[in-house]
Length: 437
Ligand SMILES: [Zn+2]
Image 1 (cartoon, rainbow, N blue to C red):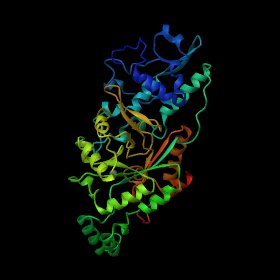
Image 2 (image 1 turned 90 degrees about the vertical axis):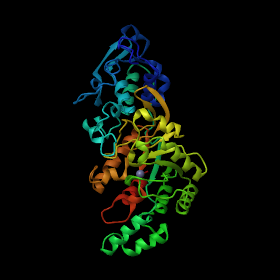
Image 3 (image 1 turned 135 degrees about the horizontal axis):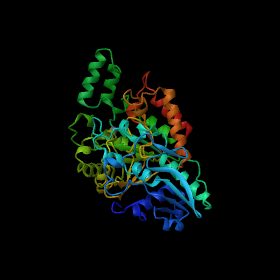
Image 4 (image 1 turned 180 degrees about the vertical axis):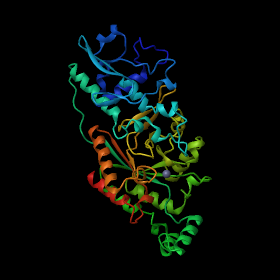
């Protein structure tokens, strides 16, 4: 690709993948779409996208390739590269808006690679520094909007294409099991007792009851979650479990023994309810990714079958060049990619997309299911800090976008976020969303 100057036909395998992705259900018409600035080739296609200089040698993977704000827009959709002009050349519609490079930029997490210094205290690419946030389109799946535009241009050029259905292609109700309960380790138990004696926390009786049986713990909200989830019969439900045996760092605490009685009983209930078990890879494995395969193996041993679904703790997804660590660990489906700081469409899409390595331009065999929203992203004072009504309105907006584009809705609610208290709206918000589904 980098060897191509923009004078030649730039239809490489990755460009072909992007065009097919944009067309979605109509991908069999991809041969009608060209990606070239060579006028002599225009007549072969019904729609031609003219490449910007994004992929050119000397530009690609350098800071010169980054879009500049303010962005232009094409038919109301923010445009990262190229010009919004559209013209005709014989029977062919020629579009100078480079929606191929614009889509590639978002789908491959290109910015994570080229602006790798923009990370937060956890080493995660910072949502607040991301282009979708800075340009104000994180709440719009603009790659899917490009897909709509491309289909409309093909129709203008005389191709008869069906409209996609306006419904969820899939709903995933997912839960990260960071802790089985609040008071199950010696440390958290001592802390609970201390706070209770000082008149704070959940009260001494609650702490003691949890110590006797985790099912009494205020964070053991799994039975409630299973009941709520059962209301959406068509949804897939996944619980992601940690399996790191020696958590050294504070961000991987509290520890629970995935092979112990408490976890065993919970896993049994989850599997009996028809839910899947996925790997919640540790915070530590973000720095030491060779651990991911060990964690996956350990969890697989406990559940008695291979584990192929994944989300990392703290949403610390590995850089886009390191997807092979997940693939090598047997991960086929990832559900991590969203920003903790703000819910929305980090990849510009709400549809399942292959993991793309922007350095090699190769597809890594992992299906990425973009995370639509996480409970604490909405409420946390350091994140979006929304009230119940604001959070519901925002959730509704994201859900409407997913429905409109026939995308996947991926929700992340933690069992530990559902602890009853006056200022916690997460159980009420989850119930309301479940009712909408
Ligand atoms: Zn977690």
